[in-house]
Amino acid sequence: MPDDVRALSDELARDPASLGFVPLGEALRLRGQLDAAARVVLAGLEHHPNLADGHDLYARILADTGEVERAADEWSIALAVEPRHAGAHKGMGFVAYQQGDLDGALEHLELALAADPTDPSTVRAWKMVRQAVDQAASAPAGAPPRPAVFAGLEGADDGLLLVDPQGRVLAGGLRTGDRRDVAEEVAAYLAGVSQEAERTARLLDLGEWRWIMAEGEQGHLHISAPTAGSLLLMVRDRSVPSGRLAILAARVAEVARRWLESQVL
Image (tube, rainbow, N blue to C red; front, side):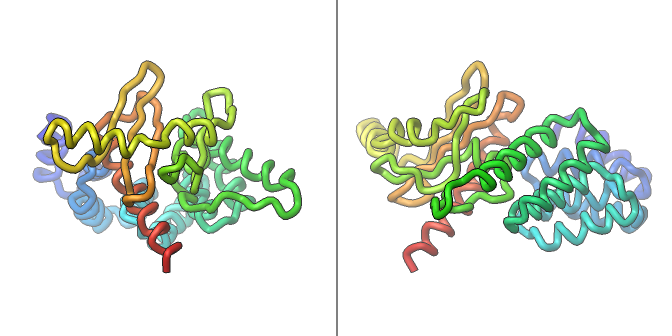
């Protein structure tokens, strides 16, 4: 157990009413231990029911497990306690975006920026939604948009790409640092990756391949196969550890798998 988690756990053991439940819950959440994180936060909220940071953290844990409606309830509680809470506004922006309400998402993200203009994740989310709003306003009439499979997930339009074995984009999007759209180009390069990975794994007697991860100077990427007929590429900057990237990729792959299966029904 890392020293910070151990120290915070010891603090809570000594004083169950300590506010240390917030950093401890966040540390457990980032490690992917969502059940343990939820238990810690709920116990802390029993002592501090009006702590906006506590409700915000519990909401993010719920969102990580896919319980978006319950997460929205927690963010609403946080905003009732602290109307300018940046994290809660960012969370409500996430919910609005997932529901297809771009204007509502933009409004919440602008309020989040007003409360904390230096948070890089909020800035990235605002830019993404602002671009989506502008694209929706300028799109030609009748132009079919890509399915919003990853709506509400970070990087939905610029860091997640779902393709078929022929290299056709099924959902998501991919952009460079200067916002150039490279989804179609990268999708074409990905064609055949599944076959090559399978062939290499077979030659080396490694069994069925599961995923490929690569670390670069500017960021990391993760490739997996949600189904036999698809590939999922996730791109994140270097601030995301490889372990966290693998956890995020597994959750996104499950979203992609459910969507792909629904298209067959």
